[in-house]
Image 1 (spheres, one colour):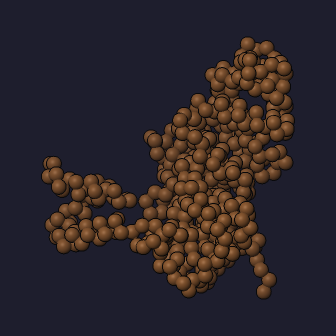
Image 2 (cartoon, helix red, strand yellow):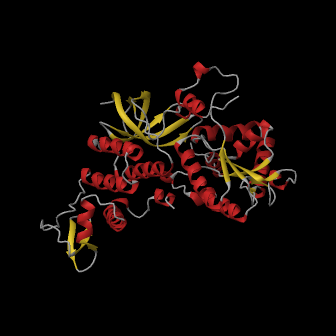
Image 3 (cartoon, each protein chain N blue to C red):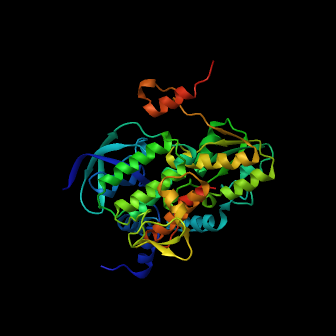
Length: 198
Length: 220
């Protein structure tokens, strides 16, 4: 059986979501058409609103609805401290820790030459510009510890060296409330290397 | 063969798949480059480039399934520039190797070069040049640095250009014979190293196609 054109186009539209194939898309389409027209219209409005209204913050590249995101626009935040993270969800995680009063720089990815993601694709040219402008005292690298994360961190270190800005990296080690025997070898090795006197 | 036990391999690249899985490109001892799905692979810190691994691969066709795996020795601790070099080597292999085309000798050479990037005193760029040269040789695209296409020894005072299909051809202009000979001896002179870089770029170009190697951007 062939779907009517409108139904078919809705099914195709759903498949643009990650993890949604033909079958799931069909199920979603029928669910909305059969039982939840109101929800479908709400989805359509929110989608349009977000796709047209959300852009990237001019300063930190996080998602924002204005020129600046709420963090960058907040005068109480310390502009001299910049925490470099890979994704908006990392910003959320650090914000929830409640410890940090500086601002962020969101890479939206990490260096991955094989995927064709070079320095400018993750906004490092913008970060370099900001380093050169001055005003940044410290860069805090909070990128992942994968190979790509390490490469990204090293690249940023080289960039910051040229402008003489202090660079630090968040500590790696034993999680709070964690027992040593369940921590993997590589993490323990890092934890030992990064030990501090008490 | 649908299952290989304890196949030694290195991860060349991984990308997220579904919620917690990875699609990895592996460079295996007996199967060459293969693509495989690693279920729950994002929660496994071992499953990364530059860690020597061994494990089981199931299935047939383009995309295999990676079963249990474990480390088979210490990982070379690549940092900074050496890490960029490793990424460059991985990108090169991704572009040069066809899937399911085994090259056990190249795997050994890859491993040796990764370790040399960490332990060896040799400048990194020389290690990369040797890797490129040997890789082309193993893949059957090698050429001589001491003899030209007519099999006569290079003359230090003549110039040569590279025909990537055949080898060095005597020409009115191009690379200096003396510098190529120094290159073959492993000279560390900056001029000779530049010749090495340009020569290898020309040698690799026809096999890489239109797209440039992105890792080159990392070396500022």
